[in-house]
Image (cartoon, rainbow, N blue to C red):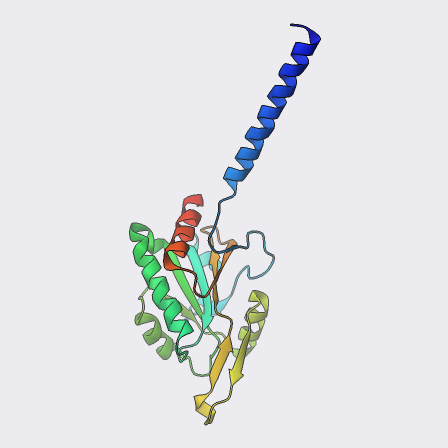
Length: 201
């Protein structure tokens, strides 16, 4: 083998390795239907009391995919639709359904008492958990999660409604923020994303 042949062989080998390297890189990063937030430096955790009075953090749900949604019990459409879709996703996951934990953080703690939220969660799935922050905790948590909420006055003091962001954050089984699912993301698409996160472990 002369020098020219050796150089050609080395160059070809390097090219093949480069292609293989690129293939390996592309395979290591999964494709999601929701917006990929992997590595984001916000919405990393929460520390809030649930509807049973127990303080909760993401660490409580290690080994599960966690879906976090902000809403309120008197929400007429977006919130119940989202919860219903989460129930459908859990059902679609079959045997892996127990590895999905839905967390509902109320933006209306004045009306969404523990009793109200217990009934509200039970209407969708008994495993779903509602978190009830104090007004101060809500402000801090919403800021950390980049969530918008605002009280909109009604005809009477108790008939107000709440404007709020309508999307879900998804965390992988290690408790890392991974996805942002806009309201209206198809159930099948989100179920597929959750299955991908579960496979990654």
